[in-house]
Length: 190
Image (cartoon, rainbow, N blue to C red; front, side, top):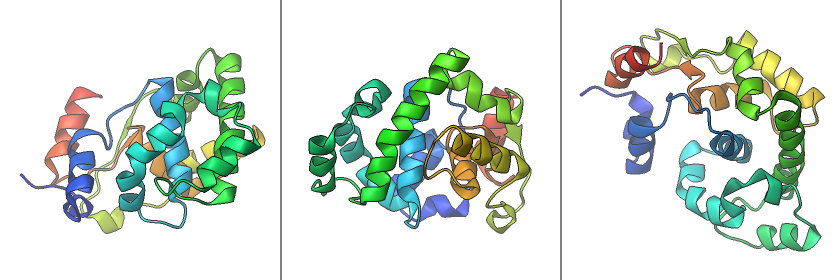
């Protein structure tokens, strides 16, 4: 079966492509996980983050936003010494700030899911890219998401990160049209 070309770079990327990428996510815990992982990716390859994903889950208490929001300096310093994650002080601190902002959004909108999916009208956008080079780095929707998240105090949520987040959480289906997953996802989540 034909797959998106980027998925063939490694077994971890292929598995992620085949099972997760582009599948709509409505679980707040998983939405928070992807928010933190996409921010951690800034300036790095997604394969680096995928290879550290389990380390992140352990280090960040399985991405339970209520726990992460309460991290103190001692916990942050432990994270900065943990080789299982990207040890970048700005990104680690942003995870804590983002957890606090995430909880506020959950309270205001009765869940993060309802808030974040408004940027695509509550339904996945199914694109029809012929080749990977056609896929944009950002869109008007990711611009709007980035602007609103920043207004709410989130960090590491530029428009490019937001678009990658939209792809990861299935808000957009950016599998190329020759990839078997494009039709599968479009058929199941239209």
